[in-house]
Amino acid sequence: MNPDRSEQGARPKILIVDDTAANIEVLYQILKAEYDILFAKSGTDGLRMAREQMPDLVLLDVMMPDMDGYEVCRVLKQEPETARIPVVFVTAMDNDEDETRGLELGAIDYLTKPIRPCIVRARVRNHLELKHRGDLLEQLSAQLAHKNRELEVLVREDGLTGIANRRHFDEALRCEIQRAARNGRNLSLIMCDIDHFKRFNDLYGHFAGDKCLQLVGELLKKSFKRAGEVVARYGGEEFAAILPDTSGELAGHLAERLRLELFGQALPHAQSPSGVVTMSLGVTGGLVTRERGVEWFITSADNALYRSKEGGRNRVTVWEDQ
Picture 1 (cartoon, rainbow, N blue to C red):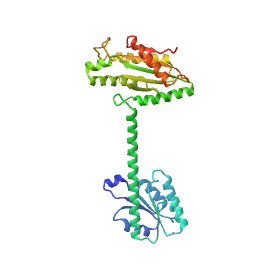
Picture 2: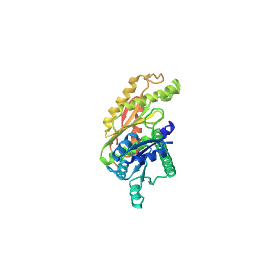
Picture 3: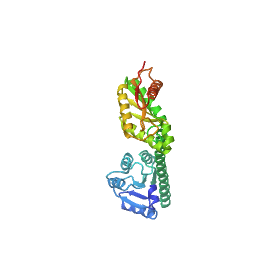
Picture 4: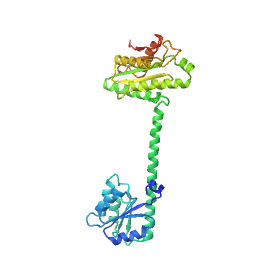
């Protein structure tokens, strides 16, 4: 039973597949009061109607001339679109071998002829209820998976700027360093800090400060969008960019381009020597080795950033490993 169908007030649909009109009529009379009844008089037509109508349950005769019920059931269970439709065999064959064969093909039950109306109603009702519960569970599972994906994004994303947070940055840097070490590749790290940001916040207020942080986040996303590149809010007004397969020299040029991009925004900052918001940047990079792990990259990039600040801010310093 489709949960959406129940919510809309529509009745469950049952498909009867039997080559004998009298058998179809008997089942129709038993079930018509509670369900919408579809019917097909051959296995081929039964498969077509199942694909087109997506019934909630199929009552399937075993002995049919063109395609027997076992083959119909096998095809239904092989196709992803129809695999979850419950199939109940209705047959005069009541030996264990036939019943076992049908159940092994994916049928959920066996009804034997002659038909007993009370048994048919009870079993149909039970199987439809089980399907309804299964559909509801699947729907809830899908919703839960969706919520988990949303939660994963929230856990890894900075809520203000929309770029990676510190947790995601730490994971990404560790993974990229391991990958570069295995493949003998370069890796670069840029650390950047908005100059005199506390003064900016004190002068213009926290709302303007948030807008400034968001602007820097947007500039980072636009500047570094190659596959594998990760930009993150490292903490407070400090940001970072991980650049796989990038030398320190090239990363220095990219950092300078980012500095000029922010400077060109001309965001007013009356407490800054330049009169606009600027940033200081520290860059480190090179071939990843055993000695150059996570700690080395962060420390050297941070040292380069410190030199930029000590040198007057609004500049890029590329760390030179001694």
